[in-house]
Length: 151
Image 1: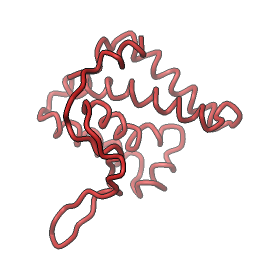
Image 2: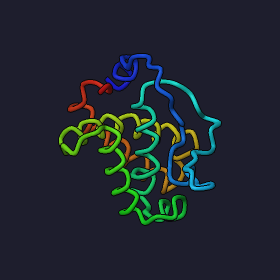
Image 3: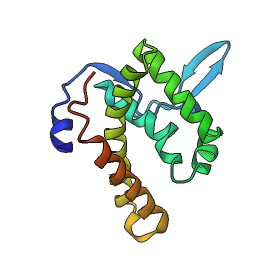
Image 4: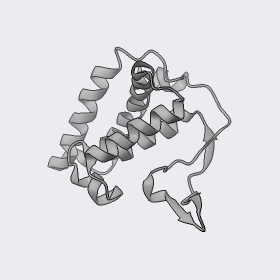
């Protein structure tokens, strides 16, 4: 089902940063700039949202210190930032509408995190196995509910 969901995502011409998080936002002369554009591309925004979900939420689920170390934010603050940013991006405060898109991003995000962990020899470390199990559990919960990755 996961493969079919990804294959069904239509081509889009939306600009994607590919690594959007608070470390890649800077101020210069009272202007907000987005930096680190080496992964800039076009595509469906669900892929950008999945990357954001990973950075703000999923990477810190097994060890919240990962979020603090990387984003310099406590994990709880990063999660709140993610939820507010997603609602703002979607232009709604409807928690059900936001959650529906969040779950779509989670599907892509956890699939990516599992793949990344496995490729980094994750089966052979305690942390890797914990990440793989987290992803497996989250995907097993999400996939019966998510019938499309588009919004």
